[in-house]
Length: 268
Ligand SMILES: [Cu+2]
Image (tube, rainbow, N blue to C red; front, side):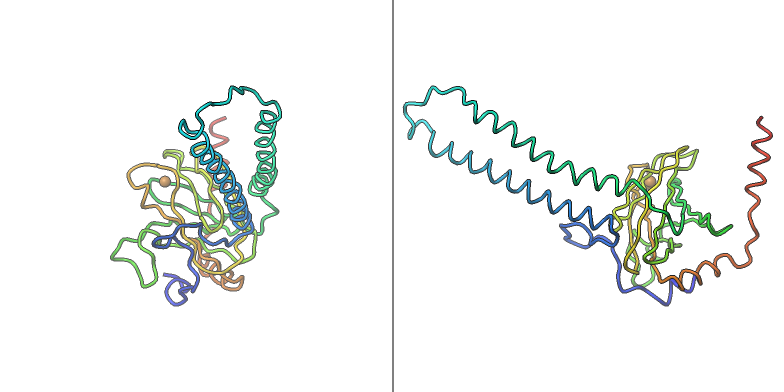
């Protein structure tokens, strides 16, 4: 298909592994933050769970009817009650601060180097590169008999989204106006945003390593929900430029703008 797909199968591919337990390794600053936050929460919930387990064990061992034949009549302990109210509040505040920081980090797209528009159809993704007039394509999942060596089954598509490494990519995400809700997701990028018909959502990523990155539609969207994967190929800037010129060679500028103007005028 293109010069990138056949010859240069990248060494790094981020995709689900058999028996994988943790998150896919992070390839963007956002995903690094998500992974860090996840590990931070894991420590907190482990400590809380262990603490409750210890209390329960003490209750079971010390205060069962055999070892504690005359139970205490105590029903209130002000200090204890204040403590078990205030401590969880403190824990929640400690969680909330980095949580909101991360949410805003994901939400606020920095000044992008490149913009891509992804549209969810039933059941594949369509892509447009508004920075490069006329550069657009659909990405349809490869059937089993179309897979090349190195292509992961149910994840590889006929066209990859190609982006340059270490550049801020803004992804505009929407759904086919006649379609249903999908969700554009790349786990290694920490990107997941709904593709809603008639609404333009956005996400961003800055991939820090070249390679192939795979994701799947993450909104239960119908019959072929499981068969509309997302494949992003991160390449060096020079390779990206070559891909763009190959893709745009011989393309006529679209007359969408003219059509749009006519439609708008016509409806007024
Ligand atoms: Cu979908």
